[in-house]
Length: 156
Image (cartoon, rainbow, N blue to C red; front, side, top):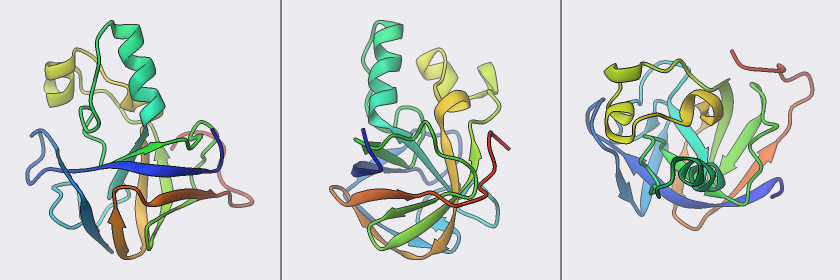
C-alpha cells in the first residue's frame, strides 16, 4: 500500500443507527456527505476505512464483510491509513478532508454495527475527518494522503 489509493465504496444512511447503503457518487459539502446522517457541524463529518482492514477483520472473525458494514462513509483500497495522524489531509475526488480523529469509543450492544456484526474495527482503525474543501466524489476516484508537518501523533 502507498500514499495513493482508490475509492471503492461511498456509503450513506439517512438516520443514525441504520445500515449505510452504497451510492456511486456523492456531493461533499462543508457539513459532510450530503444525505448522510453524520453530516453536521462537528469533527466527524466523514469516516474512512481501508478495504484491507475489512478483509483482515473478516479473516480474524472467520466471515466476510462488505464495504459499509462498519458504517464507514468511504472505503478505500491500496492506501496505507495506518500512519495517518490528525491534521493530515485526504484528497478524494474534488473534495479535501482533514483528519480529526483516529478510532472511536465502542458503544458495545448500544451500537447497530456491534449488534449486527458482533464487534467492530472502527475503534482501532476508523479515520474521522472534517471537510476543508467541498467537492464531488465517485467510486473509482483516486484518494491520496497529504502528510502535514506537525500533525498530532496518536488519536484524539
